[in-house]
Amino acid sequence: MRITDRNPTSAPAPEAGQAHETQKIESGSGGRAAARSDSAGDRVELSGASAQLSKAVAADRGRRSGRVQSLAAQYQSGQYHPSSAATSRAMVHEMLAAGAR
Image 1: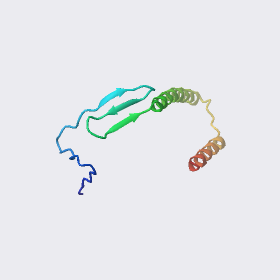
Image 2: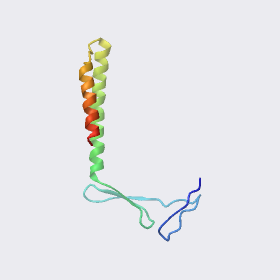
Image 3: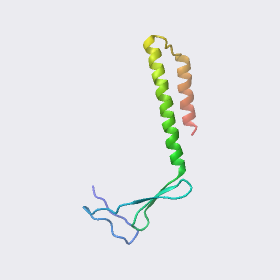
Image 4: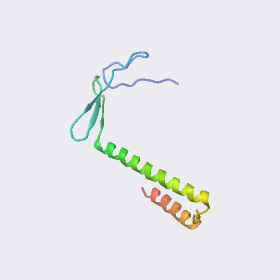
């Protein structure tokens, strides 16, 4: 397999074995964090939305963990009786909703 560098800029491509420049992380106002490279043109910006998403995922993880533990306890005690009809309806509904996206 041959890889051809089609770098549209006049800057030379990094050579194999060369150390890449270290990126600096700067925190700006408005809940934004930006990582900037010392080289020309490279920039990554993460917004406050990513922080909110991370918090929501962490909160959901804790809620789900508690639900799984509760279901496991019900199952082990013989008190868990799932409805196959409700499960199949939920699965079909979820698939139809995913197809509409």
